[in-house]
Each structure stands twice: as C-alpha cells, then as structure tokens.
Length: 324
Image 1 (tube, one colour):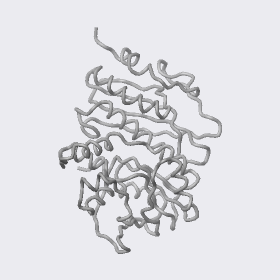
Image 2 (cartoon, helix red, strand yellow):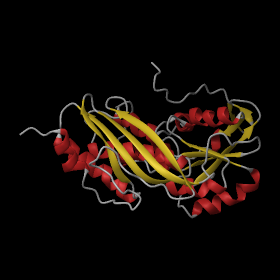
Image 3 (cartoon, one colour):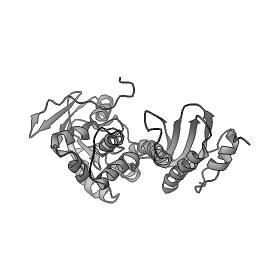
Image 4 (cartoon, one colour):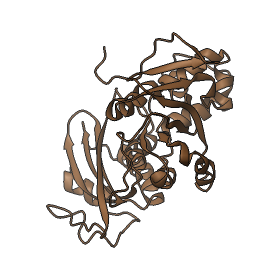
C-alpha cells in the first residue's frame, strides 16, 4: 500500500524525545497550542533550504537536517533567544522513507540537544526543499538587534571564519586536499555548524548589536551598519582563522579574503560599547566560545578594510541569493 502524508507524519515526525511543558497541543491537530512564559517576548525566524542551492541531491540527509535546523537556531542565537519550538514544511518528489529516516535522525538529534520540540508543519509533493520556522524566548526588552551599534563600539566575531567556504569548495570539487582528515574536518564544519545559543544569551547585557554570519562577514556586517547608521573599520590581520584553513589555504591573504566572504558560518558578529569590552572575555569564557575583536565602529556607512592602519583595496562581497 502506498505511503500517504499522514502515514509519514505518524511514522517519522509524531515520535520525538522532546516534550515541553509549554506545548499543550502539538502535532496532530489543525494548529499547535503554545504558551509563552510571562515576561518574555517570542522570537520567530523562518528559513528555507532548497536542493541544488543549499545542498546537493546526494548529500547525507542527516547532515542536511542538522544544517537546516542549526541555521535556523543560529538566528535565535543572534537575538539572544532561548530555542523552544520548531515547525517543518517538507516538500519531496516522492515519499522516500530511507531518506526520511536519515533526515529525522539528524534533525531530532540536534532538536533534543537544544530541547526544541517539533510542533507542526506540512509535507507535500514537489522539488525537494525544507522550510523551518523556529520560535524562542527572550526576556522582555533584552533582545539583541542590528540597530544598536554606535560610533566607538568594538566589532567582534565568535569562533573562526572561512572553514565553511573551504568545506564547500571541497564538496564542489573546486579545490582538492590530499589530507583526508583535513578534508573531513572542513566538510564537517560546512555541514555541521554549531549555533552559538549560549554566546547569544551571554551577550544580552554586553553587546549593542548582533547578527549571525550566513552570507559572509563583509556582507552581514553591512546589515548592522545600515540599520545603525554607522560605518566600520576592520583589521584583516585580526580575523580568526583555524589551523585547518591555514593548512588548506597557505596563501594568507586568500585565506583572509575567504574569511571575509564565507557564507553559512553561523558564527555571531556583534558590537560592544567601550565600557563593556572588559567583560567580553570573561563572559564568553563561561560559554566555551572564543570571541575575537576585529575592528571598530566608525562614522560613515561602509566597511573599510585596513592592515597596519593602511587601507586595503580588496573588492569583496558576500553571498547573494539572487545573484547570477
């Protein structure tokens, strides 16, 4: 007998380890019923991943699921929110249960780690695509936004930059490495980003603005600048590069340029007023996440790149979903 939509939902999505007390009614009805804690605001974000654009048709479904959920959770991290719920709209050419089983394995492993409950969604027939809507809580009035940066604030990023783009280059056979372990590490960093949830929460009392790096630092920082009405100066030699990226790309300038343009990093870029700068290292140490100061907010409207105080004429841009 052919598998129908409701069979798939019952078999793969109704059974999950996470069952939150703030979800009176989840999968199985026309709507989910959810409860927002008193004194909190609800943070909501939606993202889509499309086969052929965000992942290859032969990609491991468990890794695709991890990347899909992690990228959405990263949006909550950028606001300083605590994840709570997720809904999933899955479009598939055919009900491929082998694919679904692996997808759910990756999806629910990450959901359980962050105690996120799947509360609803939809399955339908069509080209393979995944759309998630995540919901999280942030204390009233404490959400991090893109509009709070001021002249004199310092610019930071979490983690390292460039690894995701290096992994993608390997995946697309644009570059090659004879070191199998190095290649595996970079591919993992492309497919299995770690959303900086604890770091985002820790920054609520420290940062003036924040966002996650999904389209490349050079592009995403521009969103903060536009919303805040300021410019920024970045010291390219301060950009944090992993040992693996430096090994993979020995030309340091090329590695730095990759760090500036690499999309799907899902690290946080944030600005910190001068009076809070001393608290960054201590606060971030408690989260286990490295934070690196890479520049300062200036008057103006654009990102300028410098080395040893001298301007660099690197014409760089991040990812554009509709660019040819």
